[in-house]
Image (cartoon, rainbow, N blue to C red; front, side, top):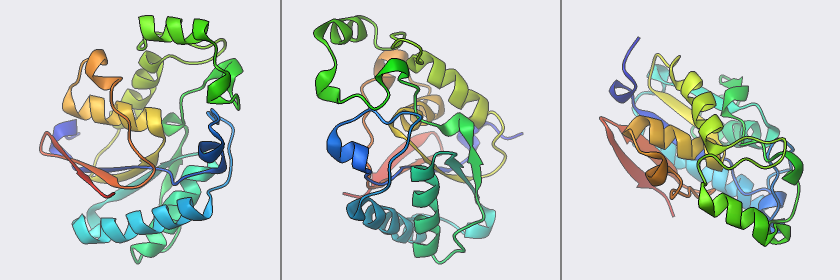
Length: 196
């Protein structure tokens, strides 16, 4: 089993979805990609084609939610690959926001914000997950990686993939925000971002 830093990971977030536009926590629920999100996925596929090594040496993984699978399929087509040929893995799903699933971000109370800001790593919404829990879940996923990989996931799992690869502290981890467009390459213990 190779060490994580011996691998090259191409990490992407799903394209823009309706819930992104509406400012909602979709979490484990789903919403379709917007037209812009579909084009972001295709653009990421063309970008991957430019910067990735031989596709025959890569494994492809996506979160099991529809928005990431759709992004992966559009990405693969734009890169000149069949749309299928990837594995959907539930450990790459977005953070469970519990009772706040589908809530508008603008509806989050000051009390919630205060508790989150006091300890963002361990804060957990009612019946949801903390960032620390997502870190553990994504850690179980990366422990099984055997080859260089393309991974399409969500904001929080992308944050954790980056943290695990670079060996970041919780304080460093929580500050990272990955956009819907663009690609993060983690290779030889370093990171490089390509895109908008």
